[in-house]
Length: 208
Image (cartoon, rainbow, N blue to C red; front, side):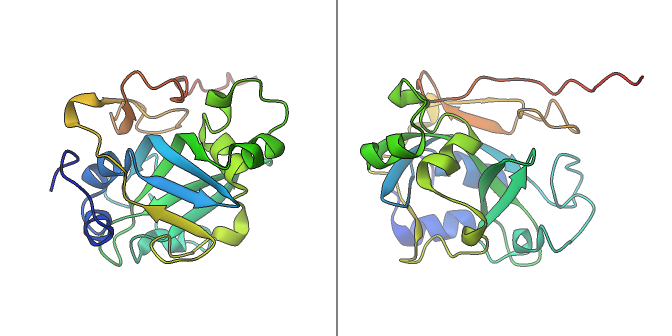
């Protein structure tokens, strides 16, 4: 199966159970629904586990924080960052081998009023879920979503795209703001989509 093929719910489950990079590319165009809002995913980042990906939360092995990254696939890995933001990942790969895809940005396609109410300072609708923290805020996703089966009919639901994203419409580049493996081109996005976030390379702080 490629991202140009129609994706069924069963096909999405199979995709997520495979390697993280094809899974990340295949998540583009999928829909994530929570809190009365649905977004179409337009940007993602892939993270492997302990197999040499220094940017991964699982790089140094299993911890209470990252345990869900070790499987099963299709579950939500939610974490808190910078003391103020939630981010949501989709767990991928076979059980016991940690990997996940960070959902970086999306287009609100349903529940626009609810998304606006959660993010009242946002002036443009394209910015409502433009960035991983904003995406979670628009959907109302927090720690309570940790470990949920996203392929089930629970409070946070991941569904196949209405129309698959052609391979020619997918771009790739370095991941954003990571402290290790800076130049690994595992960020994927839909070319030309206005909801895709701005790339910022991590800049280490100078020691004083």
